[in-house]
Picture 1 (cartoon, helix red, strand yellow):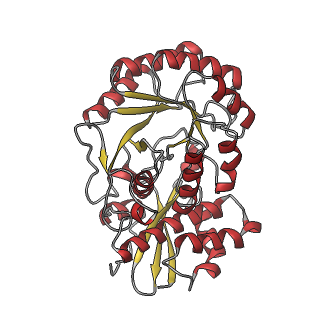
Picture 2 (picture 1 turned 45 degrees about the horizontal axis):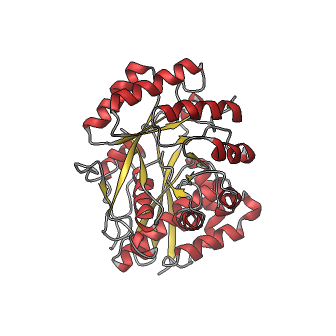
Length: 381
């Protein structure tokens, strides 16, 4: 079975608020793009790339000579060839993001052809359910309280609050936000805090992060994420050694090679690659295995789409060192792209799909709504 075509389906109109500059969300731009791979036998797969459509489409044009006619049933080998052949075209940049979407789609195809969920094809399932954490932006205390109460009403028992005013105003505001969140969700639900150190011109360094980590520990915060700028390796090493709670980061990195030193030097307690930009399932699975060898927990970054969430669910099923999956809440690119909503059980867990491929069905109306009327190609399986 060979690759016959690759399509980009730009998502517009429902991008979750993430502190983006408004220029990034103009009508002719976007931040998330679905990628469809079509085979010569009519089987199709879907992926997702955390990159604007213009960049994805340009990357597909560069990759097309290496992909058309290539095997559709060897995702890791096919996408590794793409990595190897495009070093001079943007190693680790938007080409890697586009490869991420293609790789996810190829794993989806392999699962459909074999009749197996991707997690089983990766070597086996360690779990059939996982705790999602409702991921939402920080806000002024009363607005944050309402958002958390809404999430609890939908079954979430863990929450990550991030960005917003945190670290951008004063320490009093930071503590009031965290105090409000803890009081709202109670002592028995998990609370994670994301400073958003990958924000443009992040002003804080190691000493701010260390002092803030002590405050967060007082409120039983599960982990402290992106406390420093994303490339501050030495700062993260010191922070992870000295902070009184686990430290998490690495969501902006691409390609497995970028993670090696961070894992080997134990710069974080929890590592957070994003499957829609790191290079896809093939790359992220290798990162997770290496992290497990170094006793670092794997927590996939998932501020993306329902397709990205589906890939994350398959990954956390196949990785021993996984305890959570990120779930933006609410998010049109998740809820409205799914044919059936994902439901949490009474313990706040998601059942990991065991149907072939990514294991979820897509809502054609939702896809048409956010792609300007585009449709997925019908698949023979």
